Image 1 (cartoon, one colour):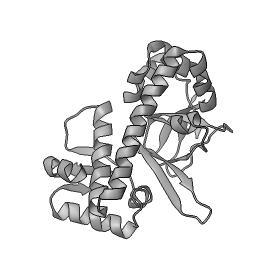
Image 2 (spheres, helix red, strand yellow):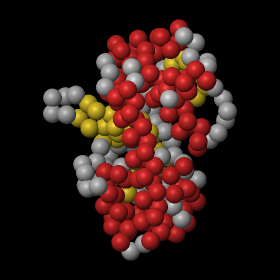
Image 3 (cartoon, one colour):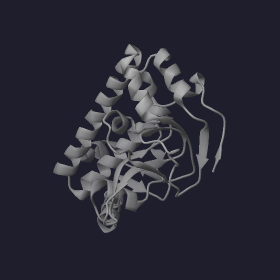
Image 4 (tube, helix red, strand yellow):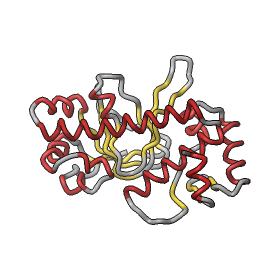
Length: 232
């Protein structure tokens, strides 16, 4: 692990869809709070810099936010693709921030989430941007919870992979039916409340049904219409 250059406004503005919720003035404030870019290896935990409420800007690589229970079980909050901001909801809600683990080598910048949220009081631009970001995150969380309640294991896995595809495409549209997805079956299970056996069985069925094929580091969508229908 080592540190690279400090992010600037141009770098911040080139990140994923979350930047569209903020004005240039607010993005400048975020850039001023961001520490240097840090490179972290695969299967590592991203260091929090001793911050109580760290927020991460993901420049490169895939990771996942998670909480560990005292009995050793793990709850994966979300999978994060390049260009995403991680941890804002926990920081603004004063909740315990999830830890960030890596699925591939990652490059991230940390910033103090508590300080970010304190800027709401003095910056209308920052307050408006955070409100828009958190409203979208809340909508996505509600949709995810709905999937857990009403979907079968087969449908949950399909819905998750469809969401990841849409997030990858939103940052860098390609129109391709194959997309990077280095997410393990264990992480999928810990996110969807399924055993690895159920995840594996669901992926095999999706392949047998000619819906999609999940390999170790990517997913090939074979029938986009069917995937949207199953994952709706």
